[in-house]
Length: 112
Image (cartoon, rainbow, N blue to C red):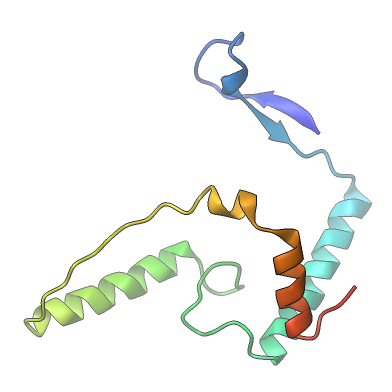
């Protein structure tokens, strides 16, 4: 791991730095291969619902926002009351328990 400075703030402030992963080309290739195998397996097992947009090849956060907006405006057009609550889970993925994650992957037929 290495540190890279952000463009804002003082160089002396440690909070202005973030970790940068320095992975070799073979390491990146291995990551890609493993990702492709896991993605194909999860797709075959239908483990990821069609409503999920993150970490899929043809969908993204933007397509999720568009689908959400389309659904909400449809309900508003029907005269239904709509309340929206936004939650920020950006840091939640940094605290995922590896044992729980591995257990869920095993449930879908992926083991060591």
